[in-house]
Image 1 (cartoon, rainbow, N blue to C red):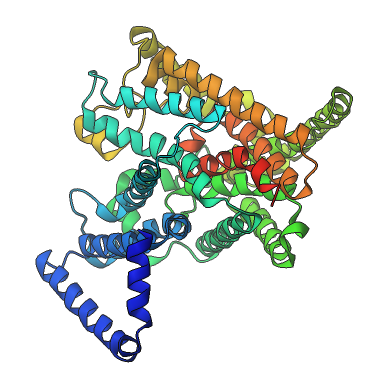
Image 2: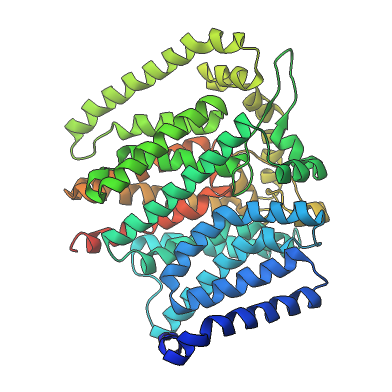
Length: 497
């Protein structure tokens, strides 16, 4: 790879090429695009997918590390680009290439990483955490081939489970210094601020023309995004993220907020400090307008857990009392605000008021009485699992009518799809991840990384808590979560920088 990349750079530095190179590249690019347009009957979805794919391939071929950052940026903006292209064509191919492109690019990165390991004859398993991760990956791969459903359903299900976990291993290639962490945080915060701004635009002005067209032509998505009036309460619109639906907007933002609250940004420079406070300020505005309960709950849980201290049993006990007081104050605030929220007459504030007693929330009751009993019954009849993808709504499960039930519970989904063996491995993995976080916090005195891992630990606990009522890592959040989990085993080496 390096030899080919060096050769290309040598050609680019030649004086003759510098003089006429731009014209040659422009001419060849125009010729290439014209050929693609003709070959694929001027289908913009397919053509743009191929162009982006080739550009990305050439980009990461020269530098896998830069390719990882480019993928994160692409994961934000490719979905909104797909909706814009659709508004121009008003049609999608049977297989939506632009929608699938983020998954394809991630698969390409993981494949290139594996090839690199094999080429350099490096070990795949380097830490004890790697073993747990690989065990969970293996049980999920086995469930792709579960005979209870087609392999294609399993492959589609793997896109939202296995591909994000691959980011755990890519972290070892990317994080080599504090500057790499800094670059990653810059990308995440800037892209998130753009996402928040897009949400605020929708709130104050309305859906852009391309989202209106997309919602109008896909009723199933419209029912998820536009909630009608209910029992005298005024309905509301959810907010699109640039990276997909409303879950892709709020879950990552809540997770990043918990990390940034704990992060001591002064060690990352003044720009990071400004971006951090800009992010938090804009997020508070967005959450107060486009109310979403799960992210608000995540942030509240993250703040409570951030109060804990793990250096000694004595410090832990003191902070545990403080955390308990914070919980009491949060519930008092919700009970105090309950009546004013109900009097607004708006459905989203009615849903927020229900958090004064989370166990009495309407949607939770519906799941307890209708969805979860069906899932439990399915688990009893399929103790070895129903197969990957059977608890996830994808285009393939809808084509084959293979969707058994949407559990709206992360643990029940894993138990249903991978059986008791997969669930047991998942619990072991979760305990191991939390243990690694706590052990690092007990050992380190490094102020740069301590806040980052404290935030990551608190964010993980928040994700696990919300997992009882939804599937937070089934959306855009998964790629960021597993990437940062992959950072933890590398920190002792980074501290020596």
